[in-house]
Length: 405
Image (cartoon, rainbow, N blue to C red):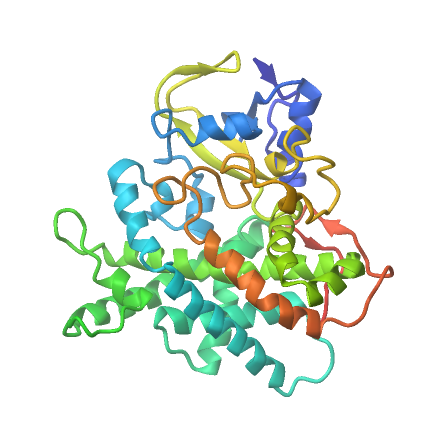
């Protein structure tokens, strides 16, 4: 088996989270290698074949896979990401019931409306697009979920929700702030969930996310524990607001390729491939984690029961064996080919309905497509002088110089 050179690769991974696995794999000449990460021997994988193996539930488990710092900030404890088998399928079915085409349409309409409301606020001068999109998506997502917030509450919730994904892996102090934000959010949502359960039920009651999650019954007929229900509500809100990262990347692509902007204005059929290429090309979430369920061998490597495994998402989306000229931004590739569920993995791989691929992927795509026309109108006409550099050491990565609107 190939091994990373350093005794412990944690710092190397943190220093270059989007390239560490793929560059190490290239150097070692192997699609799977062992590295010591967070004081634990970990197998690192990349590529479509590796993704197909990684999402085989008979071989891998999510229980006790994510490190505690990730659970305490990004995922929450007891959420769907930590479940397997029937328990996972039942919980995911609940979440997917809130992400039907009708629910997605409602959320995209709210996002566009709140974008326009935010645009009318009396704030002269250019504003950072990342923060602008966060405010818009927080207000829209909270309203969509059934949380009625004052302007002050919306600002506070936006800051806390953003910290869950923006501060979790950016140093000790930001991480501590992210933990505190999750604690505040879960405490507040637990109270709302308990209050929702005391309301009389009726078939005519509006099936908001708050209502559905609060009144969800498990296999034994019991409600979810209030703290777990709060975690699952955040599992809808947090990734929806994280689409703000993709909004920024759409802007970066438009400014870096002004000729594409003109085509997007006049060719509606070019919007879907553009959105998919943004999701493929730009860094979002670097890797996903699981544990080996039972001993097996693959690619000449023995996978031992209980061993932690990382699958490289960004590296798989930039694998030259799958993508021609992967470091070139080219929406045309999605007009020529429809990649399968293991080749294209910006939000995980496999079957969304029953597996661990992100259930909010269709919502992400719909939001990007809905907000793109507003973005095209709002961005200043910046051509080849736009700064194309990316801070890939940041998690999540963003342009080195903030984009403003």
